[in-house]
Image (cartoon, rainbow, N blue to C red; front, side, top):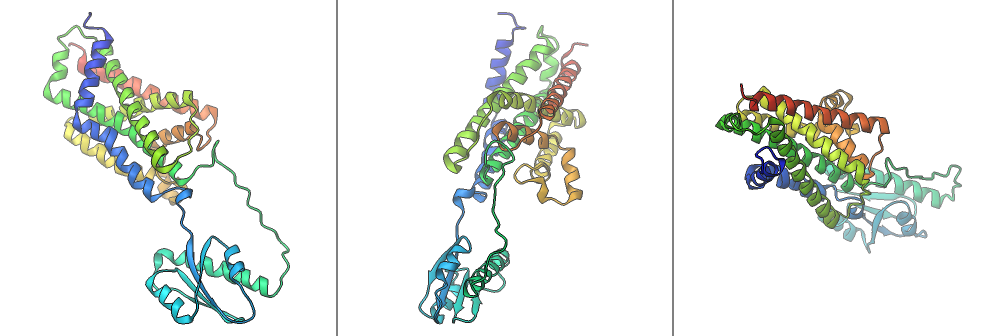
Length: 354
């Protein structure tokens, strides 16, 4: 078998990748940590818990049915003011109501900043519904909610979060792997040894690239399986755009890693820079929450973060968000060509015999 053949190079890189504990951690387990952390935090619509409210009422009106219909409340009835007061104090209910036929007295714990907006919303909704019922008010405006989706599916918080985890996985598989290969190999003099072999730089680079693509696929399959089993995600995968996005994104993230290896000659410094970049993209690239949550002056940062575009491509392929065909094609081409150009340049620089 020729030493320039691709197969043995690919097998060697694959074995090295799956034996490298640091690379396996950042490629497979690091995204899984984010998946579990954010997945349980943003549990999706199915994990939504109704707010518990309590009611003690006297007088001629029974407003329990009105309260239940006014919002997503879990209503509990109490037999006295002392009982409902103790329930609020102990945290058994978020909001207590005492209705004597003429007015409603609300009870809630002070200083609960986390639930303050929910309490105010409940008070406003319940007061309006009860007032309308007692005064027999007519409805002049009927509000109808017509849900619209940004993609092919009605995505939950879990769907959005899991797609962000896939983007992080692609970033890890591409960026940290080339830092490990070109940075660590260069520091140890391994690349210099390749210069005196008949191995062509193109074969070396292609073998490394195919290995990164394989590792990305393994990571993404694990993410899809775990997110489906634990968080009931509802992805509708368009497989051709999905695979194209994985390939171009992997190359684009490899280009980012190669840029760091060229910028920082010490692989440890490049690793540190990559870790800092990981933290930045989590908050400023729209990975785990929409960019609309950020102030305008912070959204500008996302324009310069390639992972933002990776996340958009992945969400489009999973049916969560829609992007135009031209945007999809151009973004994939930019990521693909960035990776190819930097891989070629790096291979020529470090692997060609002088």
